[in-house]
Figure 1 (cartoon, rainbow, N blue to C red):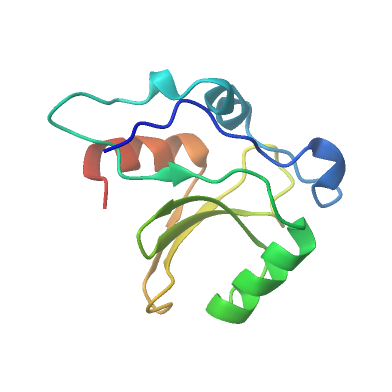
Figure 2: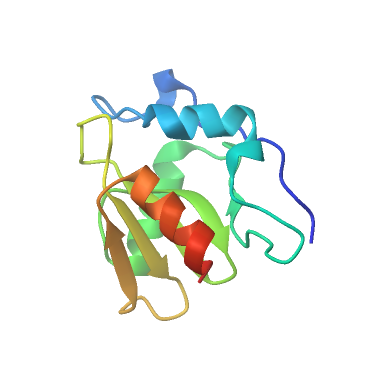
Length: 123
């Protein structure tokens, strides 16, 4: 499996007004070496690079899931991990949704909680 070294978040100027990425996410974007990764366990999530129009991405995820205010940041096959952009705390809630069957989703208190679960469980 290919190991991702870094990724590119959307620039602050493109984010919805009042939304801030958690500092731990921004730090991880620079180098993913902090992820609990070894030869027996491969971290299955791939962090997305900011390549599309952010408004279009948010609209598409709403159309697919019926859940408003989702900004995807990582994918693992049919699973998408998303920030809840209505959370203006600077440490937003994470919603992980199965894009093949959107009635299956899970909510995490914040990015760090999600990352720990992703490292331990993978999905």
